[in-house]
Length: 467
Ligand code: GLU
Image (cartoon, rainbow, N blue to C red):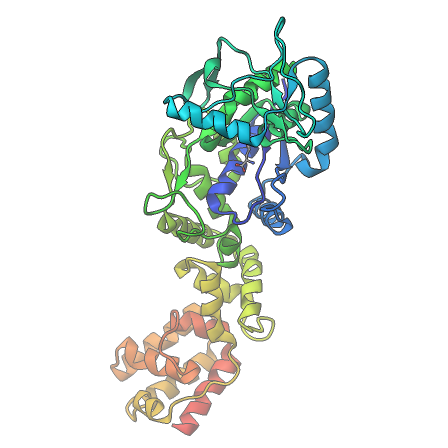
């Protein structure tokens, strides 16, 4: 059996990280089992669905490296297929037209509730051997209802929740087509899962209630129910369901916020699944380790600090050349001309160990590429005190004579300091201020090595002139 899984999002607005986790697990399972992963867009709610949301989903998946084997299929483009199946079901007696009007249905519901019964369709139009159906009203377009089994129960072994059994008496005859003939949600899902030969349905547990109905329809259509794995929801830091209203970030915000997709993938993988106490792992390891047996049974809680920590980890361990390329779009946004000035890869390499996001690296890099540095005369004077100037001049000579590498600069500073009986800040701070008009910089020897001899000495010289 080839494993076939799917991600079936409804593109109705906001797509947060929890939504993409529902793509990650079926993807990982298909990859691990050498199967196929299918993307299906459930866009039948035309009022709430949007192309923009579809784009966010597809881009988000691409960003995380969740490649699809088939699709995207759009349910709106499969309407003919659903209508054909409905016609077939009517013909085979698996479904029937129901002419109960809205008014009658409401009256039925109210009567049931008044009797403290669960509101449900009473099977008035359900054809049975020997039963006489009411006369067909002329002015009512019927809905189509599925003939749910009347007895027995639906049972499935949920890969997350264990055995679930629902008595068929709990389920009434589901409407599978509306009066205008459009198919309903649960019906489309079943036809799709059948047609797409889905073997494992891995989805949010908000669909547990739909499952018995889906299984019944699926069986009626001659299908073998897939394995179901219903994932508990992802909660936010306050323990509420994640949503835009309570501050969840869109998937796009993470990309734009300078997160590494590897970090987000690693983070999401652990949000409801575990492999011993492994916290940091590559995509390959995740796929190799992933299984349905270690999915969490209780809701996972979003932890932004952990995600940031992972992002820092991935930035720190990234290949500098690759990382530099990833920072480029953010640098451009800040107007940094990284082709002109110190070696870009070198700058990124220097900044990466302290950065939590790619944006932080870009912000740190601004220092190296700023064009017009304007010093505050008074501040410059406090830094370039008369007793510092000879030391600075000596350092400049030593630097000039050195090979300009960081160790050589460090040695030149050390020797100068000991010659003049000064401590490191006495020289480092004036140099920082002279070079950048700020004293906030990374290690100054590394910074000077990156700036290069010519530029550094020119700037220091210039300040000595002003000062
Ligand atoms: N479209 C549903 C949703 O976004 C998922 C349906 C399914 O996976 O069966 O919640």
